[in-house]
Image 1 (tube, rainbow, N blue to C red):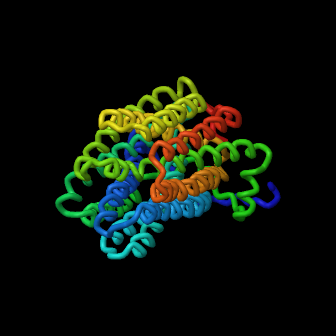
Image 2 (image 1 turned 90 degrees about the vertical axis):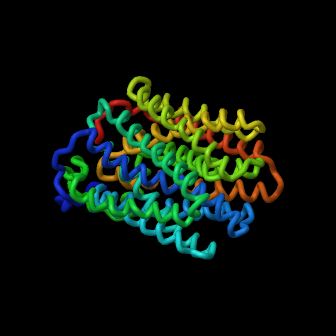
Image 3 (image 1 turned 135 degrees about the vertical axis):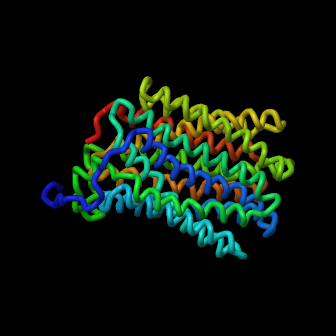
Length: 411
């Protein structure tokens, strides 16, 4: 493959100088906006289901189309990030999902809403792996894992903001007003253009001119074959279960008999548990390693999912919903720290984006599974039991196929 690659100087902005904390806040704010949009969607689904009289199967399509867009976005923008730089793609994806989300507020049919949600998903799917790659390449090895998990902790802030918007805005002003608010992050891209340098590793390495086929072949070359297989399995099982469970959380509470406005408040309380989940994972990841944190938090997620699906009382739903948030989002932080560390700079964006893209395939089927099984009359106990089993498959992949990358220098 060395004969087919040509390294040329990068045209991206030079690396500049930026403190670790400033990099974390700037990138994390973009991450927070992503979470705000995904979080708002879960509440909007519950609202439009009532307004448009949607069946559970139709509700499932909303989340699945979002994940379909995320699949194409993760793969396409991951490849583009290895070509034009991490920063440029970060800004582009931010604008794409913000504008499409704002426009979706003006739709009057499910078809138009689904079309725009596809483009929202494409922007979201591209931004997340590219942002984690940018931060991973810009931080010293001794604290890289902790900083990337802290980056992922901004996801909890975004979900909390989404829950607050849902609680205070949707009941009074409607779901359209909530979606218009999600268009505001587009203006943040202008700030990023002036204040965020590109990855030093990418800028210093330059662009490796490879075709898409050559990059894909590189992912499955002998040094990275096992890592790629492991990532694809873990990403698929984690995203499948996450979007199947969390996009349905408000709807699950409504279907269990709780009023919509109270449900939004309950989900907000569950979401608070994400923050200690992230912070505990960030504290552990440089002490115990990526594999231990990822496997442990995934096991906690699986057990919490099973318990939540079988809970009937409000107290049990809140307890196991909070534990589900704690362990699942801690696992997400570890996964985003772990993924970019598997590949060299020349294919890091591609490898991370492809893994995320494969994961989004799971995100397509997760919400559809819930909708179709509810329509067929199956209970939440069985549905969440399936998600529990899927997550445990991901645990086995981490344990038996994963390579520990704690404090290793990136290639």
